[in-house]
Length: 104
Image (tube, rainbow, N blue to C red; front, side):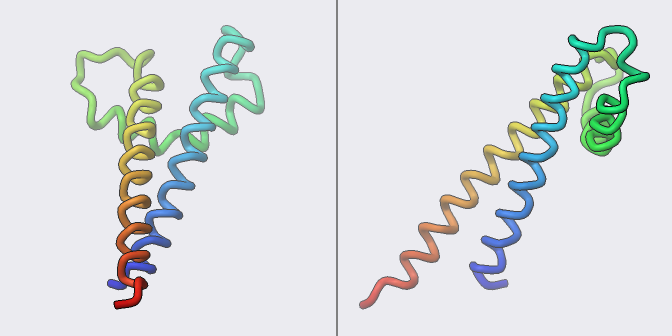
C-alpha cells in the first residue's frame, strides 16, 4: 500500500472520528438542556442515531459493572483516543512522504 493511499485513509478515519466526537459532544449538551424529555427531542434522537455504533463499541469494550449512564462519557474518551492516534499517524505519514520527496 502506498503512503499516499495510507495517508488518505488516515485522513478519512480522522474525519469520521471528529464527526463522532462532535455528535457525542452535542448529545451531551442536549442531555443537560432537554433534561428528562430528551427522548422526545428530534435533534437528540438524530445525534443518538449517529453515535449508536460508537456507543455499542464502548459498551462491548467496557466491563459489565460500568453502568449505562457512563457509556456516553466512555464513548467520548474512546473517540478522543482514536482521534489522537490518527492525528499522530497523520503527522508521521506527512513527514515520511515529505522525506521521500526530498532530492538526493
